[in-house]
Structures are given as structure tokens and as C-alpha cells.
Image: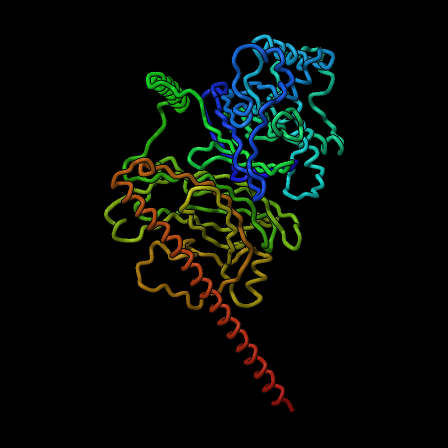
Length: 561
């Protein structure tokens, strides 16, 4: 017997109330026949007494059989057991009970018979401990293919019991396996990597068999599946009916029948005074937790002034690579533009340790792992709304030491501190000034002297420059290695908490600072073009000098007799 369920879609809910308060109302009735030549046949006038109900067959007035068969409504609680006709027939004999659960069901069915029999006819349930729940979870398909072959992971997940385990005390002598496996084998890793998610499951079923033939397993169909985990997440599939209309099941059997049913949330609504009392309890709980967190933070937590941005930078000079000589160290300092300040105890400069290089591929790398901390303040003023504010810049100089403790300049570079909080990694290329001729390189190798900048801010636009154009004509440089930085940036401001106009003005300042970052990238591109232009000019001059020397030697040879 095949069945097709139409219009089914699941939903996920979250509830802070105990799941034991959940109740569902299910209404099931027979619809019109979907076949063109199979009209709905009336039920027979005389019907045999259902198995398991013989004790109450002659007690009191009963509803007509056709009313019991055609329409039924049941209200079901969470993990409430409603027995099916198949289970009533199965647990009639005590000899069929094999487990303690079977014996418990046998006793409950006997109590139901003494009380007049079960009230449900077609609607019944399977709880979390029934065999059907185990089989349904084991044979659940992963895809919609009819020829699906379960994979290794699907088989392993099917063997996992996805529900809450019983909270029973574990005796000391019952631990027969090791808690920690120090040397796990490959087979142990393969069999133990599946995560066990505790979930409780319940199925609301419907017996859609023909009249007078209830209790056949092939006629049982799932009307609703409810799953609840420890986090209060409730999964209902299909969802509550609401205004969507009844769900429909088409059954292929002796007659092409159509069954319809609805699912409603029948949980008792909380009274207004109880809801207010619960909200008061939650407010008190959250207030105590807030006081607890405030106690952990303490009263020494400093807040910035209005219109002020505090910038924390926990930085690290990670490494330097691609340089000519060994025993490298780095000198660095931070330049604060206008409207920026720092505490009196804050050091804005530093020197790393001397680090030897090691070969890594084609380059020699020196790993410094040198940490530093910066704290700076930006104060909003009238100038910040009219002009574009500057962002702090970190300048650095890479030097090397020889055997006689003489230093050489290996490169200069600069880094604009990030305008956004978070973790940032930068690899900054460097350059150094050079002199023409072999004598300068010999002096650099033997004596240790080399051209260096008097003002390291000349790497960018110097802070003391007041002109309109900065000319670097005739300044010769050479590309050297690069330095890697890792920066952890934190920003603190009351503007992040306020919703007034101050926050909007502060956001405009931060937007301008972000624009300055883009402008800085544009400046970097222009500087790269300028460096390329200088290199082309140097190549042209060296080529012209080679041509002059070649022509001079040719003239000298022609003058010889």
C-alpha cells in the first residue's frame, strides 16, 4: 500500500517552557475518493467487533461504527502513549512480552480494558522508547532516490541513538572502557568521530486501513513527527495547520481513498498574571546576571570622553625576509597627526632584538616575533568636519650588524595603521638609498657605512614639509626585502553606544578616516609609479654612461699609431 502526503512542510520552534506542557490536537477524517469511477462507499450496516474491544461491546451505548471510522479527533501530550490496534492485539498475551517495556504496555492495556477500552480508533502514537522510533531513525533516507545506497557516514549516523540518555548513576565498577584513548587506531577514529546529538522523538500515527480491518502494519502512516532537543528547539513536521488547510494523504489500496487531517497546537495558554510573574522572574534573573558581569569588570573600567576615539593596537613584528645581510634588527616609531594624542607613559618607538636569518626556500628569513602595544586618542574638533583627518603612521628602518658591530641600512618602510578593528596582516616592501659606483658597495661591505635618511619620515611626505610639491629628483633607491606585521586593533568610543547626533557626527569622522585609507592606497599607487619612473631614469642614465665610455675607448684606440 503506497501513500502520498501532499502539502507537508516542517517548522522549527524554540520554547523556554518545559516540553511536558506541549499538547497537540489531531483531527482525521476520510475525504472524497480521488478516482473518477470510485465513489465513496457507505460503511456496511453490520460490522464485527474490533479485537481487543470485546469486553466493552455490550457495556453502555456506543457510537455507530461508521462515525468512529470516518472521523476521529484526539488530543495528544508530549510522549503520551496511545495504543494502536496492532499493539492491542500483540500485547493481549503475557507470553509475547520480552522486555520490561512490553510488560509495562501489557499492564496498561489490561487497565484500559477494565476501564472500558481505548477511546482512540485510528489515531495512535509511538513514543521515544518504542521500536518504531528505532527503525524509523535507522531506515531514514538521506536522498529522494528510490535506489539509494547508504554511505559509510549514513550507516554510522543510523547506528547513533539520537536522543537524551537516561540520567542514571554510574557505579565505579561499571566503567569497563577507558575514558581517554592515548593511542587511537585508524579504525577507532573512523568509528568514534560521529557526534551524538541528544534528541527526543515522538510520532503521531494514523491507521488508514479499510473498515473492519484495522491493525495491519502496512496501513500505518505518519501524520506528524515531533523532535525536541536539550536547547528547547522543537521541530514539527508537518507544521501546524493554521490557515493553510488540511493535509491530504492518498492511499492506494482496494479503493483509491483520500484522508485528510489537521494539526493544531492545543497547549494551555499562560494566564496574564502568570506571564507577568514569569517576566518579573526573568527580569530579576537578568538583573542579577548583569550585576555579576559588572562585578567581574569592576569599577576601574575607563570610558572615553564624548567625541573621543581610543585606539588600542597590540602589534607584532613577525619576520623580515629577502635582505642581503644577516643579523637584522628593526627600529620603528609612530607618528601622530593633528588631533591625535597618547598617554605620557606610552612609548611610540622601539627597537627589536638582533635576529639571525635562516634559509626558507629562495630567501633568508629572520623571525622576530617582537610584540608592542600602542594606545592613542583621536579627539573630534572643528577641523575634522572641514578637512580630512590623518591616521597614525608607523615608520620603520631595517638594519644589519656585522662581526665588528658595525651597522648597515637594509631598508625603509611605512605602514598606515588600520582604520577598522580586528586582526590585520601586512607585508610591507622596503627600499634603501644607494650611490653610484663600485666604491660605495665596497665601503658598505668592508667598512659598514651606507647612505641613510636624516629624517625617516621622508619615506612618505615629511611632517616638516610645508611646500606644495615635494621633489625627489635625483634621489636613487634600490628595492630590498619586506617586513611582515600582525596587528590586533581595538576601538573604544561612546559613539558606539549612543544614538544621538553625536554618534552621527562621529560616524562621519570614521567615514572620513576610511576615506583617508582609500586615499592612502591611491598615494601608494602614485608612489609606485614614481619609483618605477625613477628606475627607468636610472637605467637610461646608466645606459648613456656606458655609451659615453664605449665611444671614448673607441676614440682612444683610433688615435694609437
